[in-house]
Amino acid sequence: MTIVLASASKVRRALLEAAGLAILVDPAAVDEAAVKESYAGEGAKPAEIAEALAALKAMRISPRHPGLITLGADQILECEGRRFDKPEGLEGARAQLQALSGRRHRLISSLVAMRDGERLWHHTGEAVLTMRKFSDGFLEGYLAAAGPAVLESVGAYQLEGLGAQLFSRIEGDYFTILGLPLLPLLDFLRLRGELPT
Image 1 (cartoon, rainbow, N blue to C red):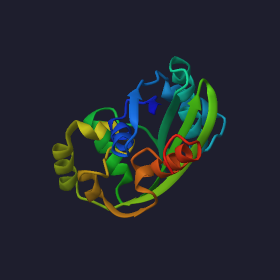
Image 2 (image 1 turned 90 degrees about the vertical axis):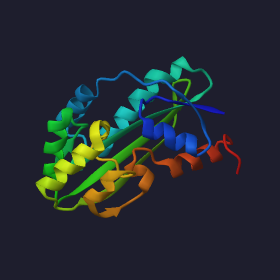
Image 3 (image 1 turned 60 degrees about the vertical axis):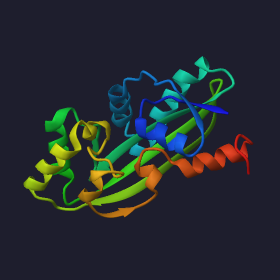
Image 4 (image 1 turned 45 degrees about the horizontal axis):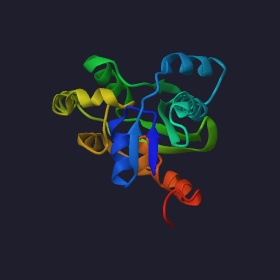
């Protein structure tokens, strides 16, 4: 069975492949900033925005792959009422990490499955992460060592690598933090008979 991933995320792809799934990557071209702004203007909560974006991505790609399950995914970081997106450039990453230092934030990851344009399933997971207070020197060393990879994540960190050093506490599912609620997805696929039970 092949699953279509409507995302260019290397991490999502790696998680799905490591779980034994055959993946076809077909990223959806969506103006995420405009969608987020529109939903936020209507008072939508972060989880609603993440789900709407995940659904939009799956909806855009699903018709291209008849008969295959298409996954749309999105993740939103929220800290004290402020939403964060992937940083633009090293300065953006530095400013974002300084804003999160010493604070708790929420990562909300939503996943929507469609087949032939029909919505089959969705799941939204949430994790709470506490970033430790760190020095400017540590931050500069972290950014230099992590390199451009920090620009690929809404938090400017990758928990599966050097980003682990930024945290003092994590509450929630590891896969949700990485942007793909994997265990609920595997349950869904087993219930549909797409994976062996």
